[in-house]
Image (cartoon, rainbow, N blue to C red; front, top):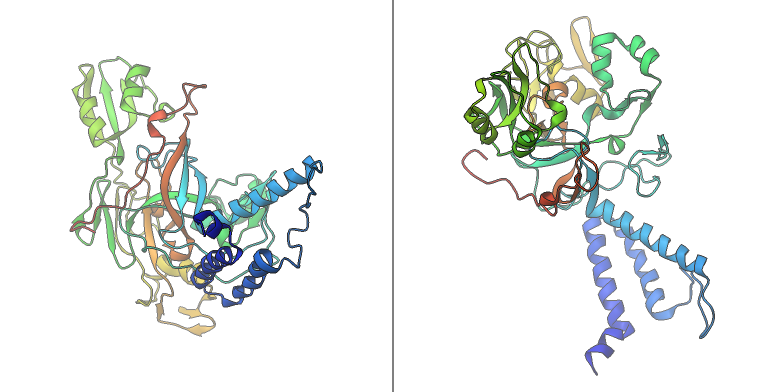
Length: 450
C-alpha cells in the first residue's frame, strides 16, 4: 500500500481527526464534547446524516450552483476563523499612541491567546468577526452567560510582558462618548450630569469590554512605585525598555524641527506643537536614544524632563490623600489570589472596586463598619490575581495609574506579530510602514529584576 493510499484510507482519516478532536476536548475540559466523535465517525465512515445540509452533492457533469458554492465557502470561513479567534489568535489594531515608540497607532497585530491560555467565551451569542459593536449597535446578546474559565496556556503573565486585556472600567459605556472613562466623568462631573450629557449608558459583560494594550510592570504580590516617571518594583528600579518614552521641554534658538527630522526621530507629529513663547516644544516625547540625539542638535538650547510632582486627584485611588501624581506614585501593593488584607477606611479605596465589581460581592459602609455580602468584615481575601499595567508612552497613557488594577480574568493575550502598519498622518503608499511588517515580540528577558 502506497503512502497516498494510506492517507486516503477512511480509517486512517478517522484516527487522525478523532485523536486531534479528543486532544482539543481534553484541553477544553468539558467531556460532553466527546459526543462529537459520533459526528466525526459518521462524516468519515458511515455517512448516514447530511450534517452539511446546505452543501449540494453534484452528480458527474452536473453544473455547479455558484451561490451554493459561495455559501459553503462563507460558512466554512466563518466557522474556521471563529474557532481560531476563540482559541488561538485574534486580530487587533492599535488605536492610540499610549505604547509609542514600542507599538504605533495603526499597527495591526495578531494577538496570541495560547500564551496565557484562551478564555472560554462567556458571551457566546455574538455576530461573527465582531467584538462588541457592529453598525453602531451592540453585536452580542447576553441571553447566554457562562462563568469565567481559562484553558491551560504556556505560562502566566510576567513582568515586562506587553498584554492585551479588557479595559477594567469598560463595564459601563457612555453611548455618546464610548471611548471615554465613565467613572472618570462621574468623579469630575457627577453621575446625573454625565448621563444627561453623554448617556444613556450601556452595561457590558466582562468579555465584551473594549480591548486595551499596555505593558505589565508589576504582577500579583509585587509592590510598585513610580519615581520621577521610572518604575521601581519591590525596591528595585526596573529595566528601561527601548520604546519607553517620557516628555521633555525642548528649548531651541527659535528654529523649528523639520518634518524630516521628526520622521527620523520616529516622533508622532500629532503629539508635537511648537510654542514661540518657549521658544520650542513644551512637550516632546523622547526615548533614551532619541533624547541624546535631540540634545546633540546645534539649535537645541536646553532639554528638561516634564515631571509631575503636584498631587492629582484623578490618580488612583482618587482620595486626594495619597499625594501621588503620575510621575510620583506609590508604593502600592498589587493583590494576589489567596492573600488577605485588612479592611478599614484607609484601605477600602484601594480594594472596593475589586471586592464589588471584579469579585462580585455586595459592599456597604454603615455606621463606620464595612459589610461584605451583608456581614461585617475587617479583612478580605482575594479570589484572583491582579496586575499593574502602564503604557510605554508614560506621559500620554491612561493606565493603571488612572484606573487601578487589571484582574486576571480580563487578560486576553499578548501580541505575537505585526502583519500590517499604517501611518494615519500620511497618504497611500507613503503611509505604509514596511519596516514594521512581521515584527515579533519575544518574551521579556529574565534577569534579577523579573
